[in-house]
Image (cartoon, helix red, strand yellow):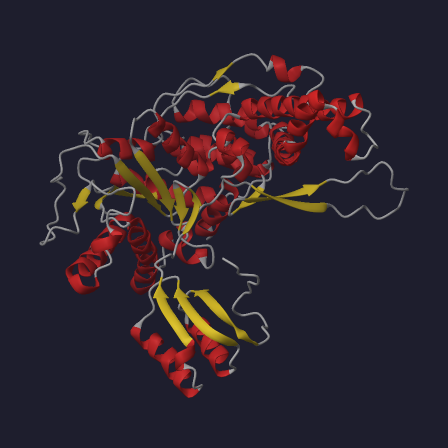
Length: 575
């Protein structure tokens, strides 16, 4: 669009008097003050103000007053409410916010000492973002939610907000040209609001698919992964300061074909594919070199080429595909580095063992070795890995272990260096949840180890997968996916039969759990209040693959990995 400079609002900016400026900001107190200051200092030629979330009347008046005082009214060219207060990480996945995400975190919603007013603020923040999301989609959803949870509070408020907007026909955001522009024109989508508390095991689960692993073990945030490159140690003289590690960051984007294809694949398959890509690239690279050398062109000027008509075509195609080859090379290098970093974690922490064992626990299959052995094995995983495993066991258990057993586990965990605070919280949570409902089942899944990868094992491979199990996943639905399946396909199931039903388009809001609409939905949005993860996202993506013509979007109030989640549980469990 010809924009050559972008700056953060609160940075020191010099005046550029002959240039129009586009603002894209949240309408917060401090942001508005800063914009008024810009007007007073006459920084730019004209101002296009875009608010991420709707700006209140009083704040709009503040800007108008500042513009008047600065004699800049004519320079404010446009003012827009953009309703974009959410972040889209994938075509089918979004999170609410990145800044102040502690405000809507799992911990914030589940703090025992939270006041009603604080809870209102948290809920309003979530509802504001969800409202923006539906304005952007251009569709009014039918809302279903579980009773007695934070998800229900969100549903009630969102229903009210959508209803009020629809009633004000002149200013409704859902009429006229915006409708039908969405991909969801003829049929309304279903919004399923679930509470994180219905399934606390999945966010702690070790995982086996590429994207979820990257998020679990590496520093992966807003689609960018930051890696530390270990620099060679051997060649530094004794006593020298260790070299600083280089940090490299890579963006994993929709443009990256390899990522798009393999982000949901089991890890060994990813390693194998990277290897294949590398080999096919090398073949092409040699082809270019070969063509050049056949024609003695390594150092020649290009003039000589034109005489060799037959080879010209070959060479032209080789040369024209060079940029493409280089891009391919960049992606292969990127994934080689990322996958190698993931593999190091898998091997060092025996993550394949954890993953397989947790799958067995969650699907209630018989366990081949005792939980205590894994917890007490100094070579298996970090203290946090052990804590995650134990919490999953504790959450999934039909009946909690006896006090004596629990003491034994606690001692083993403490000896392994674990912080027991998260367990404190989960214990309280479980006691509370037991009153509310029975434990969630995770379907019966089994992972079948198929002998180690033979292809990747050959010595030429970048990835030494020795000792890493090649686990193949069977599709089984996680609780969130199961709930969605019941509601989307209109199946009757005790788990979801008493979910509340809201239709903001109905004139009288009636509180019922009886759906008016009896047909299965084609489009659905699942939103997890209290935080989501890539394991659940991937599970939904896999589920919908088998359903022709149906779409699902996954959203959550924040996206956390197990480390971040354990930290929140630990804060909740502190005495």
